[in-house]
Amino acid sequence: MEKNDLVEGSAEALGTSGEGIVRKDGVTLFVPFLLPGERAMIKILRVKGNIAYGKVIELFTPAEERVRPKCPVFFKCGGCQLQHLKYHYQLKFKTKLVEDALQKIGGLSPKVSPCEKSEKEYAYRNKLQMPIGFRDGKNVIGFYAERSHRIIETPSCPIHPAWSEKVISALYAFLEETGLTGYDEETGEGTLKRITVREIRRSYLVTLTAAKREVPQIELLLSKLNKIFKEYSFFLSFQPSNVNTVFGEELKLLKGPGVYEAEEGGVTYEAGAQTFLQVNETVRKKLYDFALSLADETETIVDCYSGGGLLTAMFAKKCKKAYGIEIVPEANACADELKRKNGLDGKMENLLGSVELRLPEILEREKNATLVLDPPRAGVDRSVIETIKESKAEKIVMISCNPATLARDLGILTGSLRPNEKGELLKTGKTERYKIELVQPFDMFPQTKHVETLVLLHASSEGET
Image (cartoon, rainbow, N blue to C red; front, side, top):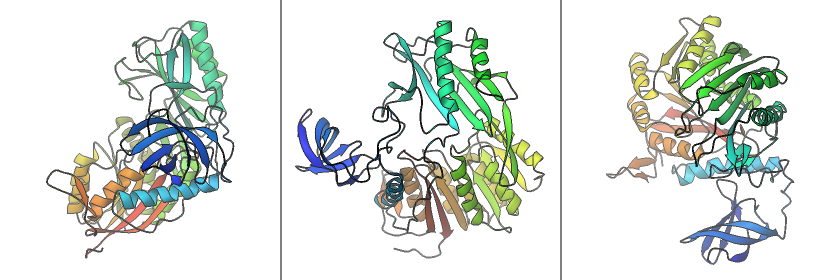
């Protein structure tokens, strides 16, 4: 099998990114948008040893599970991977995705509950984040193609609410009327790099990230946003041309209060432009309610990676006390204001800093605390895992948006993975310090390959195979 070959094949299963897996002539072939049972003519794009990647040229036998995608750029954009698959089967795929990751990566085989559905299959995201570029002499706003920084022009996106299409249209009009251009990563030229909008209960936090500190005629953009949003705040974020983070180090508030207040689970909270909140509000409620059900009023909770403190406050209201650890100053300040507004003095304590540095000092004070870990996609730092293993924590609740790093972290925690002298993680075939009690996936991200998972662990006095 070589590049540009045409081969016929049938998909046996779905891979971790939702692509079809075809086995042919001793080669495992990964084909995006091909479903199990479907037969197709496939063009080979890349071959590396016994692994190959291809694309569908002609589909011969569509599966019963196939549906027509709602998005016109679905097959080009890298944002969604599963719009061609009926939602019921998306849930099955995500349940198996978690099962396979735990087994293949972590050497673990706990029972995985069926993935909890989202009430909204589309228009569920409360956050829009789009790069703004300049290509072939024109501005382009959209999402990146899979595994690239090539922007796929996206005038509207069905997993975002209707307001997102209006924001995109206003941006194009602003660029055209001012003569400004999007940022070209290859040449380092251009002004506008990214637009980010977060909805907080019908109020909006808009951040325009630019390669220059000042954006000419910015008032014109504000006048266009005034027609879209009744209540919003606007930030201008300066990000030098050689940096590619979401926000720049300088964030200047040009309009509005900068933070907005909302209520959830009996807790009044505030959120700013950089405050972390789950993008799917209905599934977030299910997730948080489930996490809260695992704790009782006698427990002390340490909420690591606590963001704006919403879940920390919920635990504080229910339990004896809750600590929150957050490294982003803005989010930590929101958590302190949340504590004040909800009368949680003495019940909630927010610590600014990294989990690596702050968790050991809390565990010195709170010997029997229950730990809640909700890390970024990269997972939990190894030093944090070692701190937990050395502690006497009896209960851990882990929340993760990445099955692969979740499986790795659980493997190290339970002892099913252990590093050799080279630091490589090897499967041991047994668990020691902790036992997994339950695994519950949540579909926080319908139409995509991503899944949120909650895991409950208890200390185990004896190793188990």
